[in-house]
Image (tube, one colour):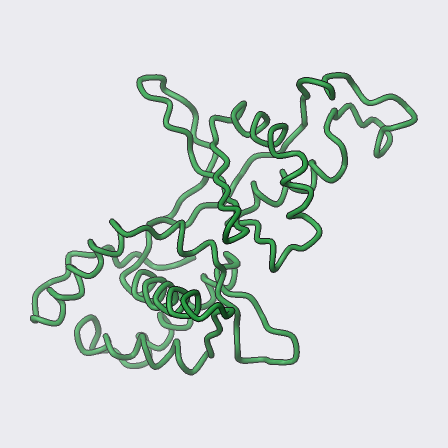
Length: 229
């Protein structure tokens, strides 16, 4: 699992019924030569910003995505990206397209996860799965995340102060990438993005579980421990 953030600056080009430059009457701003309607453009920007677009958290964008999904999918394909939509969970995100032998440019900037990043994401995903079975939104507190990550202190660090900084850095990284979002009226409770369940798949969960078993047995987990930005 890797974090992903788009570095692309989009200028839309159309297809089908919308395959024509904007006129002065329907241009959104001076010099606008885009061909997508405004709602579709907003959806495209959100998807490229990542990590996901969710019906629950983005009630205005979700209907626009469903209405214009073929246009949005076409624009993303021009960038060698796939659009993934789960209509049951009302979540969508982008990923690099499988281009086979075609050497395609990579437009998603990725950075490796540290061990604590992976522990946090696996914990959040577990809470998400449990909440999903109850039909509830998945919520987590700052204290819960801190306590969960502290369980691994003895296995990966002997520097208490440094370890606390790494914990906070992992949590801030999850917030920055919108994998957890603030809850109105609360300063220390967060809603977990439903997209995490799709982006952090069963195979990666299995690999991480093996690493944690190694750590519990006192072995070197062989996991990257690069500093977070």
